[in-house]
Image (cartoon, rainbow, N blue to C red; front, side, top):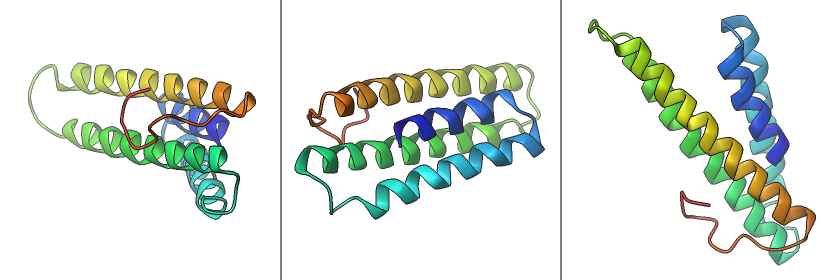
Length: 117
């Protein structure tokens, strides 16, 4: 799930429109995996599913809103949107790496509902 989350944002950042649909598919796959196992896993795994879902939803929301800002006819908007999306990408990659590391060690995520690590 954490690997699919990272892949979804990396593909959307790197690929132009037709290729970004693959990133969308990876994100939908990550949500499907996390949602289907959300209540059935071990208690430590349940925190990872919450953490992954929260990462995807918050990251996607900021990504889409910043993408909509590119339609504003002001100078420098495209640069600002690129910077915001780069920050979101770094945030998602950091959360995915931390979540993956904790999952490998079978440790729960301390507070899966926070937007921080």
